[in-house]
Image (cartoon, rainbow over all chains, first blue to last red; front, side, top):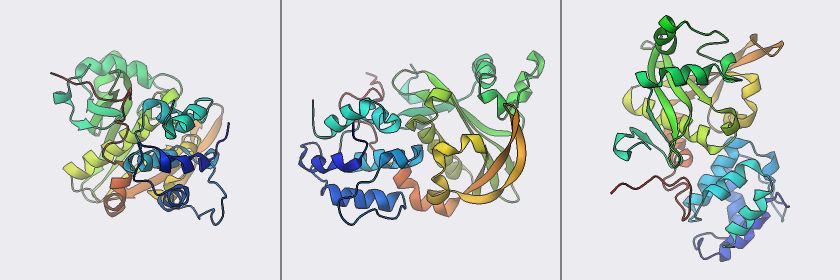
Length: 96
Length: 201
């Protein structure tokens, strides 16, 4: 199970997230909101394992305000980073 | 289930309702449970039945039960106490069921209380005293929201050792600048969400 935000690259094509500009823009917003030095350039993913609960809450809020339907499952997965994270990733790309 | 019309402070995951007399026995059991018993307001003590009311309410400005929107379950207590009209400051406590400590529930409850306090009183700043063992899940708050006002070294005795007590503040201008990030509209309202508030016909 990957714990990287790299999965959000697929959100740009998800019907539920038409306003997202794509992975780079999303990561840029996460870096801006959390006031972390960007780990860009390149494709270096932000690692959620290094995020505390407050930073994950901000990611959740950003997903929500970006038009992604955030559910209990995705929220729980985001905060616990347990096996449900895989379901979170699937949910982010519109399935199952 | 709490009727939506009675919810004074409503979030997407939780709402806050006033702590009432009928909650006192639950509050005593909750606040004396591990590990919350080590924290304010009881700090290991068990108040006498006659003194329970005073123990719960001494110096308190406002005190709420944190209730999960979907289940109606009490998740914790948030409270403001020690209001100082000269400095226009007040202290906040966020006391949550341990299994929910690193979920969005406690964070949303915290932000709802902050919003409530700044909305209803002209406070300049809100203060928190946080034992260092409880700070890790929100350490980024030092970068994102809170002002470091120092620490009382080895001030809290808990589980066989002394811990520092961290003092943090949230000034009104910082909250006004960042509130829309921490309390966005529409958080967790997606289809199938277990957190959706019940509808009342």
